[in-house]
Image (cartoon, rainbow, N blue to C red; front, top):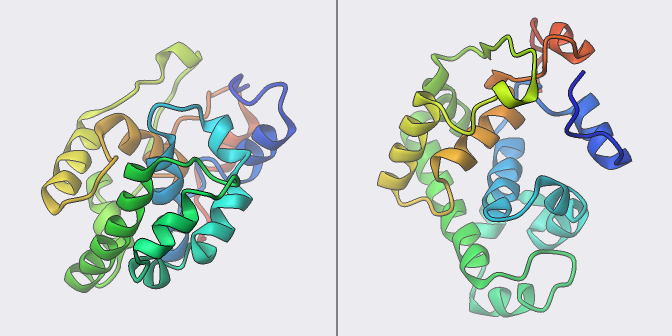
Length: 189
């Protein structure tokens, strides 16, 4: 059984319904991109507990709207208690939205771009203990390097690996966790 969500109802619900489920639509990819980039230096619990605030602040995770945010929007977000008020991360979210759309133009979708790093199918790991789960992998290294080359911010290899876990690009549920076997045959999202 995965032990990281224990003791927090919101974390447990996220683990039981979202974490590791393959994401195949761009809107949800953008949501995870924003949430994971704000996680840099913080716990996932901190971000997850502010998810509704992020959703409201970032136009329901509409990347086209976020890409059009102005300095006025940055100032508004810096006063928003529903999110993490970090100017560099706020500005990065706007810049990343623009880059997200450039990737869509180049690849036809962000989904097609991001899944290339795992050869378009989830990596199924077989961890017995949480300490076996890596913070990064060669795949997340490649993903981070490519995203950095494209100008994405707050997308280092550790955050890319967290993104890969969240988006179901890797199955890092422990083999004793009921979700492990449930996710062997991914469903569309």
